[in-house]
Length: 412
Image (cartoon, rainbow, N blue to C red; front, side, top):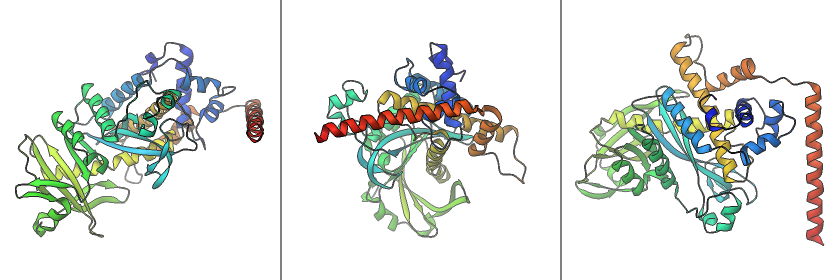
C-alpha cells in the first residue's frame, strides 16, 4: 500500500483504498461495496462506492505500480508472459462491454463481460500485471451507449489479440524484458500478433488449430497433415510442468518451418499419452532453442488458469457489481493487487522458510486465511451489525417501492 499511496492526493481515499484491498482478501461470502464497507467498519457503502466511481485517482497508474511490484518480487530471466481472456456472467444490458458471447467460465454462450489479462509467470510465482476490457462491436457501433458507460469518446473496436499486443507493448515499453509469450488459439491464429512479437524480439509459443497452415521446405500444409508424416523417433516424453497431481507428461515433437525472415520458427505438437489427443503450437525464437525450452513455455500457459482461479476465489476479481468502465478498471486493478500480494508473500515464504517434508508449502489460500485471521481481522460490536441490518432493509424498501412505481407507470 505504501507503493501506491502516492497515487492518492487526499488521506481519506488513501486510507479507504487500504480497507478496500483488505476487504478483497477477507473471507466474505460475497465481495462488493456493501459487504466490504460493513466488514471495514464503515457506516454505509457510500465511501467505497465513491472511491470506485467519482474519486480522483488513476487506475492505470496503480496498474503500473502493480507491474513493477510483481516483476521486482517475482523476477525471473526466463519468465513467460501469458495472455488469455476470462468472462463474467452478467444480467441486463447496461454493464459496460456486456453482450451474449462465449465465455469459458460458463462453457457456453451467455450474457457476459469478457476481459483479456496479461500474467507474468516465473519460477517464483505468477500474477496478473495488466488487463483490458473487451468492448464488442455492438458497443462501439453505438457511441451514445459507450459514453453512458464511461468509455472514452471515439472508443474503437479492438480484437482480443490487439488488446493482448497493447498490453505486451506496455510491459516492454516500461523497460522490462520478456523472452517468451504464450497463449491459446485465439492469439496463435492471429498473424498480426505474431508479427508484432517477432518485431519486438520476443519468442512465443502460441496454440493454433489443427487446420492451421504452415510452410515447410516441402511446401504449405495443414498442421494435422504434417503430424501424420512424423516418424516414431520424432516423439519425446517430456513434462510440461508440475500440476496438482504431479508431473504432466506428454509426448512432444517439433517441426522446423521455412521462412526467409530472421529467427527460428517451429510447429510444436503435443500428444496425450492416454487419449492420444493432439494439440498444436506456432513457435518463434530469435535464437535456436531445444525442444525442452518450447515445452516449458507451452506448459507455462496453464498458470494463467491458476491466476484466474486464485484471483476470483481469494480476491474477488469477478465479483465487481459495477456498470461503468472507470469503476470496472478500479475494482479489477485492486483485485489484481490483492492477489499479487498473496503471490509475493508465497514466493518469499518458499524462499526463506521452506516447508518440512511433512507439510506442503504454503499456498495463497492458506496465506490469505492466516493473514486475515492473525493480522487484519475486523471485529465489530452488536450496534454496528444491527445498524447495517437496518441500513440494508431501508435501502431494499426504497428499491422495492421504486420498482413498484415504475411497474405501475408501464402498465398505465
